[in-house]
Length: 114
Ligand code: SF4
Image (cartoon, rainbow, N blue to C red):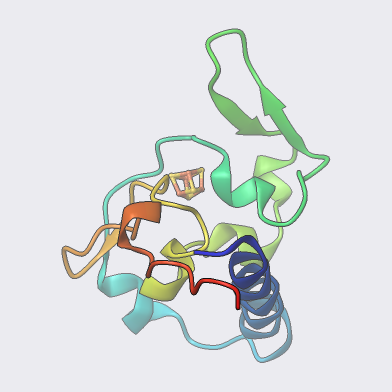
């Protein structure tokens, strides 16, 4: 995926998740019911577009949230849709209906410039 295409998807995803979690307060039970797996603490979702200032890394390279108990709604619910995984280049360990996150290898080939 071209870098600007990815950045655009990440920006749309951030805005959508904020609206879903904090404005609309959508009922997420059905969405979360099809999400499988556990967080591997890779920290990738905390670095979408920018690195969250509350993200901390320990000596073993594991990430943790400095405000975990008080984290924002959109952070609690990530990932909420299968398309959220596409913003992370295959790093997230969650799946939706058995489908893992797409990787860079799944991205369409770039269109050559004229
Ligand atoms: S990207 Fe997925 S696995 Fe990695 S920290 Fe975020 S929720 Fe956890």
